[in-house]
Image (cartoon, rainbow, N blue to C red; front, top):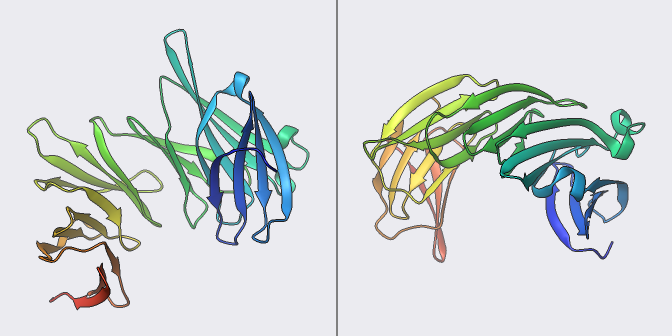
Length: 253
């Protein structure tokens, strides 16, 4: 197709979900890694809203599209779930589930390896069970302003703004159970998972790493700065990507 691409997402098996737009109609396509079209569907933007996020399940069959509608002083978000396998074959436009949320904007949706899905909105996270027809499991509300959100394979996390100027790092399972809450006094500009359960906070030189219990595994600085830090093999090993080189470090017990 030669239409403009609005959003795209890649599954573990190499399948690619693509949303294209032509006027007030959106076209959903599912491609194999070699470009062969597997399936397609439509979304009528005048009825459902405008797409702002998209996510494809690990098996490459279920596609979630987040749409937002603005009108008459009200905001409404819709999550549409398409299934391009057997479960969606007999459904209109392959849509197997649709969820509407008033006064909410959902700018980020993401599947994890288990097939569960998380949809982040301005006040928290909507958690969905995986499967051919995703079902909402829980609405986990933050209760404070969310500054950053992060997604790992086994848990997700966010950083909240406290009234005293500090910040709160909280991590949750994909069932919605809070794993820990940690008060921070650290001026970071990057927050991300660097392993399945470890969160990295950094401003480019200063570094903090928290494990799945909220314990600081490392607090320090890298004077020369770095572009990327990832967990390597071994519980104490990390790789730091710097200009022109990659450095292996091991933390002391």
